[in-house]
Length: 458
Image 1 (tube, rainbow, N blue to C red):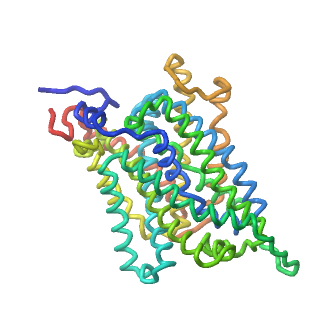
Image 2: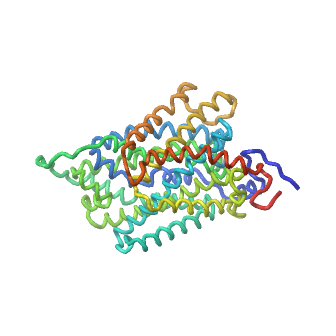
Image 3: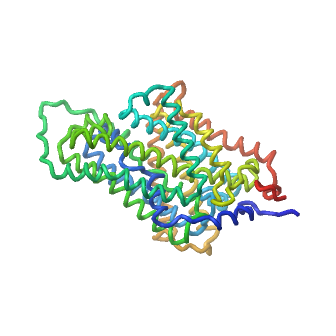
């Protein structure tokens, strides 16, 4: 018996498995989105040390308005209007056709290779501060593989498991910062040292760091088919997560600024800041929180990225095996296992290079999503939109201008930055250029969607 499935549709067996699985609740989606975007205040250290307190606070106030808020509004409208597995891939494909949908997926998955290599490295870095053998190359590799394996197994247990664990890890990870903030606000400020030489500030680098710490809102969209009442849940989750990220970034930095602590100590990470403010015990707690942050971000992002190969396989662009889902949890277990294998390729790259490539590739995919928002407003004005970006069509068109300007600034910042044998901007350009080539190759061997699925139905 033959089962015909239109491009973008979900195979019947997969629909059944996901409907039978427990769905992600609002609180769980907020926590998972928080880890996809932030994972706590970790990562802000370079912003303060490069730009100073005043510029850091200004960036933490302005960047989310220009960069995060437009993205969160765009995700809210498109996720509530098209709550499909694959999220941003489904939006761009519907708005502009299969070629641009494929480019969106290609850019996102290419960015994920560099994005996901960051978190095992950070996990080992924070663990190394507590247990020195973790700093050795062999032991570090073993720890990274163990962390990846645990996250993979947790994801196979289903999206609801990832959501629940994200709630618990958010509370545990933010607890040390609650203590740090309280102590920093009540302790007397330290006197300034007038003889100290002023630091040379790099404002553009500070904006670059702030961008990386405020990106990833669209990652939550790829699991829309596994979310309870997505039309209502996504707008609430985006607003709540945006407030949570902004406050958990801004308040600890303001508290430490009040103490008068010199910005040079921020180069030692939040661990050094915590030790300087309250003592070594809190430094240990912040190190553990850093491990939780890296683990939680990797765990949540596996859930996000793994849905894209699954949906691409349902459209015939990837082998049918990527459609295989766990019969009880509905998790695309083949994609969940396969993605970390590709991510391991970038584990040897330096962190600055990973950040640069991640922002360049992610930024270009984000621009396509803003274009899809506008195109769908023109092409499908009658599409039910439970949440609509306020301000009419003109605001929807202008929504992507701020993010586009910041992406251009990030590329300008990287034009002369050599982080190895090849410039990150050039490497990013090569990967972008490969997208159409891979699309044409996939069209050549592509199976019609539904000809064969991962569960053996033909």
